[in-house]
Image (cartoon, rainbow over all chains, first blue to last red; front, side, top):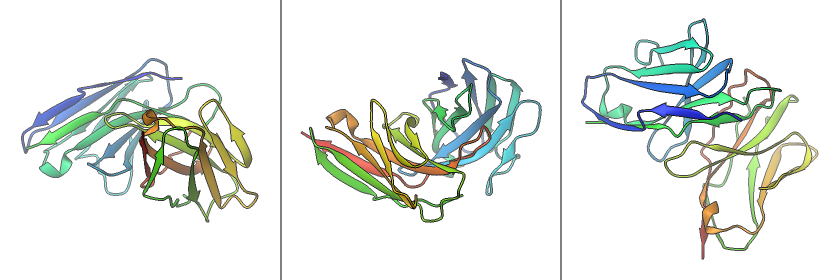
Length: 116
Length: 111
């Protein structure tokens, strides 16, 4: 299994500002995933972060808006830049289970952002 | 990636067995079927995964027919704490899979 800690758990932000979300995993993992969950909606993958290379973004998400860092095998950050009320969501960090490949994902508790 | 279709919501009572069916008509040969559970204000939690026939663990059973175009998550004797959103995902079982979450099924268990 993997234990994931996210910071902050929630925040209220002003329009036009940026916020960085941190994700710490208790074991070394190759890939880390960032998801967004808008109110009452399902999860949407933002990007995949691989240590030592640039993140891979899904359609509709760009690096300028959601820059990601992956400095080592246990940590990643997601920045939500120039925020607008439409960015109010829960942002979730996820990793695949370490060890033999299972396709099982572990998720953090999420970071709930409210943009005013 | 195969698209999945689930009922938007289901209602049940404590002690009943709940079966949630997911359709995935375009499932690929190397795709696995995985179910997640999500409580409010929490990240999704893995429940069960299977490829064919039947898989059972301490939480649930997963039934997959021979054509694999659908699957059924079975929760035995649900309790109030099983009230959650249940997601069916289909994707390759690899270390670099990026599973797509559908809309999920909101299960409400009443006393």
